[in-house]
Each structure stands twice: as C-alpha cells, then as structure tokens.
Length: 308
Ligand SMILES: C[S@@+](CC[C@H](N)C(=O)[O-])C[C@H]1O[C@@H](n2cnc3c(N)ncnc32)[C@H](O)[C@@H]1O
Image 1 (cartoon, rainbow, N blue to C red):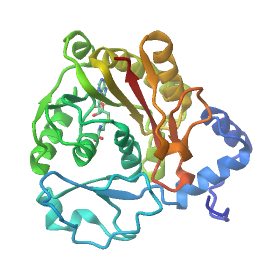
Image 2: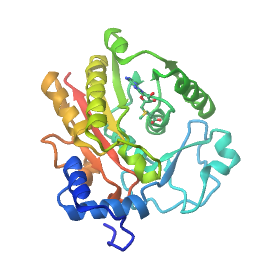
Image 3: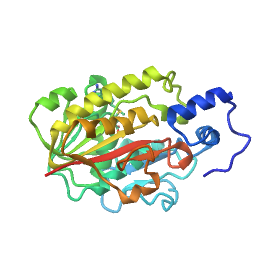
Image 4: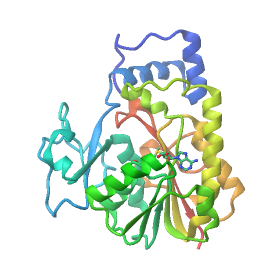
C-alpha cells in the first residue's frame, strides 16, 4: 500500500463520505489512499499481450518491467518499463502484440482457472478485442466467436483480430438476448460488461456521473439483462467470466449475487492466484481490484461454472 503524501487531491469530507459509502470502502482513510493512488499511482499502467502472430520465443523490442510483483499475470503478457510507449514500434503496427491496461490482464488472468481448452468460446462484448486476445494468449482458440453489438466498434474489433491473427475466430454482431435465444452453447462465455467505468478516472479520462446513483443503477440493470442472456449460452460444465472496469458493488458483487439467486445450476469459482483480491462484499468468491492495489486502474471479476 503506498505511503500517504501531500499529493492527495483535496475533497470535502462530505464528498469523501459519499464516495466511501458508494464504493463500500472500510473507512474514510481509505478514500484518501484511493484518491492518492488515482492521482499518482500505478493506476494507468499499460501492459502488452503477445499476439498469436508473434512467433515462438518472440520478445517485444522495448525494456520490460519485472513481472514478479504480479504473480497472476499470464505468461504471454509483458509490462513495458516506466516511460516506454509500446505503440511506437513497428512490431505493434505489425500486430505482434496488443496493448491494454494492466487491470484488463488482471481480470483476464482468471482464465488460468479453466481446467481445459474450451472447444467453443464466446466473447459477448468483445470490442476492441482485449479479452479475446488474452484468451488466445492462454489457450488455443478452437472455435471462437467475438461478438460486438456496436457496428463501429465491431469494425475495430475485426481489424484487431485480423492484425493480430486471432485463429478460428468469427466476428458477429448479435444482441445478448439474440444469443440467449439462439440455442448455441459454449464451454466459455466472457462478459466484459459495459459499465459506469469508474476506473477511467484513474487514467485521467473524464467520466462525468460515473459515481452517481443513476448511472450506476442504469448500468447494473443492463448488466443483469446481459448476464441473464449469457447464462443461457453456457454449456453444461462450462464457464462464464464476468468482468467490469468499475468499482461499484451495485454493478459487480450485487449483479452476480442476483444471477446466482435467479439462475439455478451456477456457482462462483475460487481462483487461488487471485486470493489477495477476494472481495469482502460477497458471500461467494469474486475479486475486486482498487487503484491502491497498484496493479492498474481497477475493476472486478468473477468466474461462474455451470453444473454438468
Ligand atoms: C468494456 S467494453 C468491452 C471491452 C473488450 N472486452 C476488450 O477487452 O477489449 C463493453 C462492450 O460492450 C458493448 N455493449 C454496450 N452495450 C451493450 C449491450 N447492451 N449488450 C452487449 N454489449 C454491449 C460496448 O459496445 C463495448 O464494446
């Protein structure tokens, strides 16, 4: 945990209290630590994932930081050393690696818990392609569907998939309810849900209203709908990975809790590598990353398994 310094942004006590309540932090002091980390910490840290196009033994052409601080990181992920900009190299333009933030890799590392390579996988909210890239870095893609409802974003997804050489991948643009009614079943469904994006604040991106009740409530409703459709696509014995890039329990722990209550036959999986991040806001295993954990901007993830 970083030491407190005078770098902490000034926030009135009442606003701190509200933030503390909204995010269910332990105490007001945590808000200071959080704000400090948002402003000065490791929060905007980038990572790169080696793409399927990268040949065996390939290493990126820049200096990489020590990975031992992040034992959960997938093997094909590298962290550029401070100050390195991985996008300025020809290898990036050639699709040998894909750039994303460290907390996406944190969430994607949950896939290490899969006992075997999925025969069929579906990335339901796929653009611009980071989670599919992380999946390809950890297992062989046999029959993968990268789905994106937004047409413009789907174009970017297609470009990235082609550039990085995602194998055995089809790009689709169905809504989650259409997938739910399709009768298609997958051994792995990934839902990297649209969310209030509170972690964007850590990357210096303005996100007005992201801490407000109405934005959070609206997103939680959409997430419940997406998940109710997604669970219908999970084959018996299959897995569903739910991830967000927000801190709010209403969009995270409570959404999963709702699904576990509403849908029979699913349980949340314990992922030993992520134990450090287990949330205390749920009575099932799920993981919460906050900016002061110093592993990127933050987010939430939970892996569900459907009974055989
Ligand atoms: C967090 S982003 C996905 C990021 C992506 N998985 C990655 O790692 O690069 C969420 C995606 O969900 C899409 N989306 C928005 N509303 C949706 C909805 N109602 N159903 C499904 N997807 C939606 C957005 O267009 C966006 O591309």
